[in-house]
Image 1 (cartoon, rainbow, N blue to C red):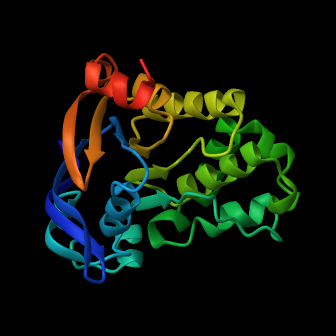
Image 2: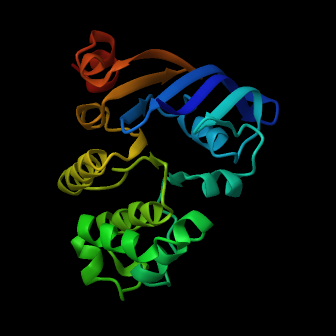
Length: 236
């Protein structure tokens, strides 16, 4: 069963078209990765899926509902949740207050305490630092808060944009391990990531975006062994 279906999607900024007929299907309970070089349209695709950019053509279907023309907050209320690139935390607010900000929708408000415990179980360090200002945390801890805030929103689909950006290899590995834990819980996720090898290693399925179009797609393991992917993204 598909949680998200993107069909023949075109989008861009003003008169500059970035995406050209993109098709994407995310299966329930699966971790899907979208990879590609800088500037090929990955963030544009996410912004269009979230309703932050208007689609020029095509449709976005979420949980069986056409959401192509829905406002971003309406999509979030349905459980379409984005963890943005760069974390975008409220740095003067505490870890707890930042997490609370994720539970703004009606669907999330009924499960605040349960979701908070899930976040603290996934990231015990955040429980230790719940009263600390987010701006004083390390980069890895801030990324944990960003992911935790997304989980507080009771997502049906969690989209993560550049999870490992600016992190040490060890911290990145810890966060990727947390994705495996979330996948085991049945959460559907879409990961956009520059670390192609690690992203495909933890994913079920992958898409390769180039020049605003899907150039390759398939089981993550097969993409990891694909000569073109190895040559272009892994330097093999």
